[in-house]
Structures are given as C-alpha cells and as structure tokens.
Length: 210
Ligand SMILES: [Fe+2]
Image (tube, rainbow, N blue to C red; front, side, top):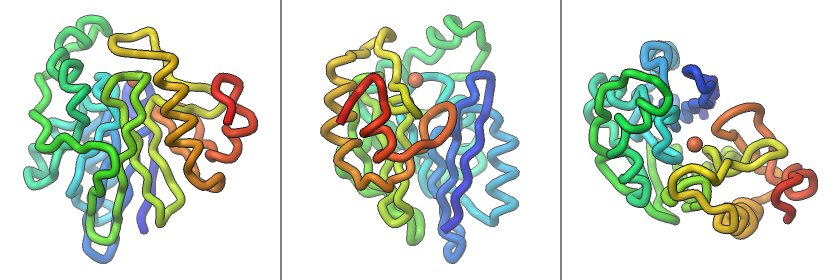
C-alpha cells in the first residue's frame, strides 16, 4: 500500500494519499491547498484518485479539491451532509481568512458513519465524529492501522469547538466512543501537526481521557 502525508497551504493542513499500486487507484484525504503539488505526487506515484475524501468543510481542508476533480473527473468528492452549510459558505470562510478562492465543486456523495470507500484494494471506513463541526468525519483504514482524524483529535490536543456548529461535549463523546474504540496501535494522522497513536492519546491526551 502506498501512503504519504504532507502539509499543504498557509494552515499546513495534512493531506494524505493512500493508494493501491496494483490498480493505480487512491484515496486523497483533505486536499487542502497546493493542487499542483498534490497532482505531482500522484503522478510520481502512478496513482489516480478514485475518492477525494474530506474530514470536514473548513476551507483549509478543501481548497485544492476543485482542481483535482477537474484533472480526475471520475474521482468522487465525498463530504458528510451535515457540513454542507459550511461548504456552501465557502466565500464567507474565504473572507474571514482574507483569501480569494473559486467556488468549490459540488460533493458527489455524502458518506455517513460506517460507509466503506474503496480505491482498488484500499478500503477506508467513514467514522462520523461530530464536535469540531457537525459533519466532521474520520477515515479508518484498518488494513494499514491508520485513521485520518481531521481536526477532531490531535497529538495531545483536540479540535477547537468555538467555530460554527462546534460542541465540546459532542467532540469529547466522539473521541471517547468512536476514536478511542479503535485498537491502541492505530496511527492517528491529525488534520494538522504531528502524528500520534490512539493508545498514546488514551493515556496522555490532556483534554479527553479514555
Ligand atoms: Fe477545521
């Protein structure tokens, strides 16, 4: 399995490519910015995205989506339905950050909890983990012992809940009931900053204990 994570854009959002070299298919998680760089990495790896998955609809996680979709029209743009109000408010978000952005393409699919997304032999399972935003989701790739956690769980921290639709109580419940239920060895790729593991956070996260 091909796996690469790299930070993109002014907010250093972690974009992840999980690919199946045998079929050349991949899932791209959070193409937040720097479309040209993401396309170059895909090309170098000989992969094309079947799925463009978004952990949530904060602008720094989807600014490159439109350009990737234009290059790979068959790729399915995936977002939880509960984050559509944020996606539709892209220009409001852009003004808040002082950015100029094009309107994003429409999501092709609203994946809910437990949905399986496939790219060749790679399977990601969607975990709905609201709290940072109402539609925040994580993508669990069990065969790689990996979860892309978006802005729900960070190394020794958790996502902020003071933005639109956020709820600290809901976030803590999502982390305890859904993320901490994964095997301790599961590697956590957070939406920003360094990686961690579920087991480490269960014992050392100062915001949400197991
Ligand atoms: Fe966010």
